[in-house]
Image (tube, rainbow, N blue to C red; front, side):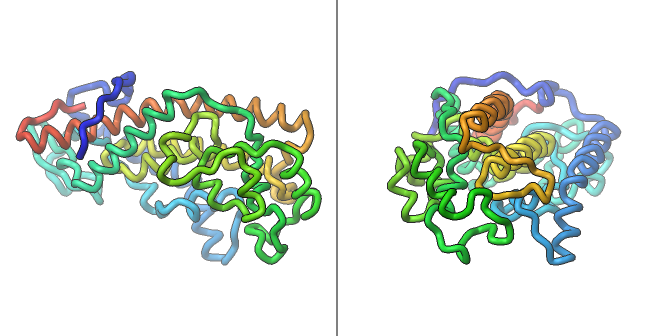
Length: 316
């Protein structure tokens, strides 16, 4: 694993203490996490049992690979020590090791350490460049541009402006998508219209903090390093992602008013202005989460290096 020279972000207050967490405290946190996440997980599971799909609320469990049940799991993250009488009392699904005062997560496996290193580099580079606010959510429009009706992703929902009206918007406004995982779903006709041609290889060079999808992806990077980042941070990133997804689809070409989503009409100047206001607010919120996630990913690397050298890292 290559060494990365990074500026150290502010310490996450939730992880600042070096003392073992008393059992009553970490059990309280685990229960609070489960109760918080249950409100998001239960409706998805119930819809699956009924064979139903929701274009907004199901997205984070279909586009991303994390299963709903795993989101319910709790962990204090790398380095934190849990006071407990015995190992059987600890949260399940984690590899624990005994240390003075209790138990902590064992050193991260090589795969997690590699992922954490990649996440550190991506987040550091994303935070280093100015956020951009001129895309207006056109990526969802470009995904259906000149596409046959039977191939439209959310074909159960009508296009507000119809197929021709949707394509006219894509062709009349500048398309400025910087996010590869959005761009890769553009139709062949829409791809040449984008001012950038993102690839997986250039992701770290183009990612910027104004992008809705980059900010939703904080959830992905958090759960990919879980349980070595704490469950509360994963849930905070999920909460942001679900609210960003709502704006994403309100600004999309789909008419979702039957589901209670009033459109943000980015085909108009007023709608674009409304979109940017919300986009800026999400970017500010994401910047804080990005800093927290960067700090915890750096802790994962520190714990891994300490384990390799045989030195015990400080808890916290």
